[in-house]
Structure formats: structure tokens, C-alpha cells
Image 1 (cartoon, rainbow, N blue to C red):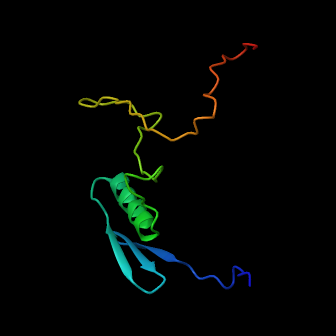
Image 2: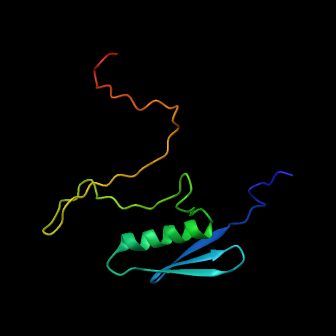
Image 3: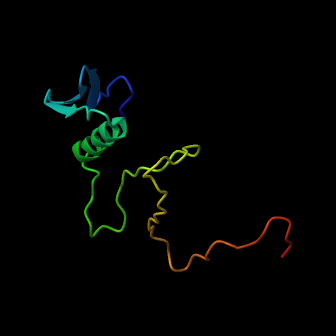
Length: 110
């Protein structure tokens, strides 16, 4: 029997609290993610990492691929004193039979 949206109940519910978030699982269990004072990105990272963990999607270091939460510099952020931009690379798996992306330039015919 195919389930309809009416028959499905949420796996997790997320509530905004005064100092972070409360996550309620389908069994009524509660998990608290505390706000990181002075760092809203860290609070968001903590919330996303906890959701990934609660959903069992975290994987491990031996998996072909796993989910990662990364921070990137804002496109229009101007570096201040004591700051420097650091370029980081992230690896992804691709099939050996796939051709690497073409290095064709704009306006170049091949």
C-alpha cells in the first residue's frame, strides 16, 4: 500500500528557542542545540551536523562519499586587519570512465 502525505508524520521537528534550537524526534525525544554566542555560523553548523547525525546520514571516513558542512568567505567580504583569504580544495569521487571536464574557452570552437 502506497503511503500518502496525510499518512506520513514528521521524522523531526525543529523549534527555535531563546538560546538555540530544540529538535524533537518522532518518539518525543528532545535534543538541544545551544546558540554559539558571537558566532551565528557555528550555531547553524551545529544544528546541521546534529540533523545529519539524527537522520543517520553522517557516514564515516571510509565511505566513498559523505556529507560535509563547510564555511566559505562571503563573495563581497572585505578582509580586515589580521584576516587573510585561504583557498581550500575539497575532493569528490568520479568514475574513472568519465572524461575530465573540457578546458574549452569561451568563443573557441573545437
